[in-house]
Image 1 (cartoon, one colour):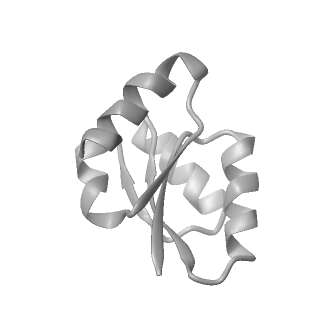
Image 2 (cartoon, rainbow, N blue to C red; image 1 turned 60 degrees about the vertical axis):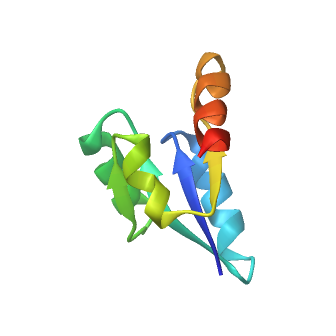
Amino acid sequence: MLKIGTIGTGNIVSEFIDACRDVQGVKITSLYSRSLEKAKFFASKNNLLVHIVDNFEDMLDYIDIIYIASPNGLHYQQAKYFLQQ
């Protein structure tokens, strides 16, 4: 089972989550947002029971893969962080 974490709470993340539900062997396990309240609302709206964080380090024990759907200007910094882990 590949454990996937997501960054962001926009529509594209909802679409990604829906697509993951159709794939055997993957599971969304963690959700990051700068706002825990926004992340909790997003998780509830998308019927997710996941580890919710506002700190990347708190995701590391819960994921194998990261899906980055933050504003484009943040992609490099976020991708670099996870690649270095």
